[in-house]
Image: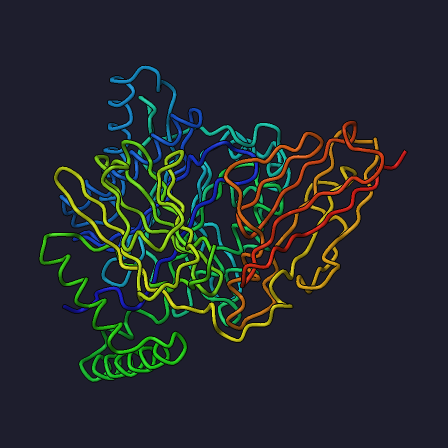
Length: 547
C-alpha cells in the first residue's frame, strides 16, 4: 500500500515540567480517512481532572475521526472538537467530583497535500518557514482580548498577571466552536508546523522556538522537539510542556507529480532502506539471524491478532541501565518511554481504557532487576546477567484487545568507550538573586573515573533556598553518548536528606538546599552517577554557607 503521507513526518513529546505534580497535557497523531491528524490538548481542573479531560478529549477526537468521514477537513476539526466537548461534559455529569475540568485543543490535518488547522483555548500552532516563524492560531484568552482592544501590547501580554485565563475550552457548556483557519495552507519543502501547549509557548520565546525548530541541518526532528522541551524546563518549567512538529521533507506535489518522479522517489527510498539496513548491521552489530528472529516474533504476534505499536529506536544494553519506562494511566491507557542509544526519547502511546497492570508483560523478564508495577510505573532496568537477545518485547492484553511492541537492543557493554566521558556534566547554581530566565554560574565537570568529580558553591541567607541544577552534557556524539546523556542515576521521586532535597530523571538533577538547615562545615552532597562497569561513581557538591 502506498504511503499517502510520505512527504511529511510527525514527532511529539510531553513533559511534566518542573513545578506540577502530574502531567495534564496529552497528544497523539494518527492516519484515517479524514487525513493525517495531529492533536495536542492541555487539561485543566486539577491534576486529576485536567489529565482526565485532556486524555478524554484526545481519545474522543481520534475515535470520532476514525469512524466518520467529512468532505471538508475544516468541518472535521469543528465536529471532532464538539464531540470532545460533549464527552467531557458527559463524564462530568457522571462524576461530579470532576466538575470544572476542561481542556484546550489544537488540531492539524494533512489531506491531499494541504494543511488544515483549528484551535480551542490558548494552545498554539506555529509555522516555521524560511527562517521565519508565524503564529497561525489566536489565543482565546483574557489578555488576548486586552491586546485586541488595544489596552496592552503583545509584549505586555506575555508577563500579564492574568495571562493564564482562557475564554474558551473543551468542557464548557457554552463552548464556542473551534476556530478554524479559513484557507488551507500549501506546505513547502522544509516547512515545520509546531503544535504546543502554553507550557512551551509561555516559557520559550518565539525567537528561541524559531532558532531551535529551524535548525534542520544540526538537529534531528526528535532532537529539536526534546531541545524545546528542555529549554522550557531550564526557563522554569512552570507548567506541563508539550511539543509536536509536523515537518514536510518535500512539497506534496513533488510526491504526486507524475509516475516518473514517483518511481524515482521509490527507488531513492529503496536505496535509503538498503543503506539504513546496512548501517544497522554495521553500527549495531546486529546479525541477519537477529533480524529474522525479530521478524518471526512480530509475525507470530500479528497472526494471533495483536496490534503492533511500532518502535523505531534502538536501546543500548548495559548492566543497571534504565532503558524503558511504562506509565499506566488508569482508565485511559499507557505510554511507553524509550531512551535510545543516541540519548533521545521516544514516547509510544496506547489509548485503551481497559489496560491494567495485570495485562502488561515483558519478555524476556529474566534480564531485568524488577518489572513490578510501582505507582503506575514499570521501570525496566537491566540486571548484571549477560543479555543475549536482540530485542525486548512489551505485551499488553485487555479483555477485548491485544498490543505488542518490539524494541531492538544492541549490546554496547563491551565496546571500547571512553570512561572519561561517562560523567561529563554541567552544574548551574541559581542563587536566588538571578532574574527569571537568567543563567547562574556554570561549571563543566569531566572525568568521572578520577578523584575529582566535584564542584563547590556558596549559598547565603538572602534567600531561604538555593537551587542547583546538574545537567548531563550532550557534546559527545559517539557510542558513549548514551552514558553522557544519561549520566545521572534516576530517582523515583524526591530524595529528602533533611537540609537538601534532590530528584533526577537521568538527564537532569535538581537540588534544593535549605540555608537555615545547612551544616556550617563539611556540607557535602553526593549524587550517584551511572557507570559503564560496576565502579561506584558520584558527583560531589561541596556547599559553603556564607555567614
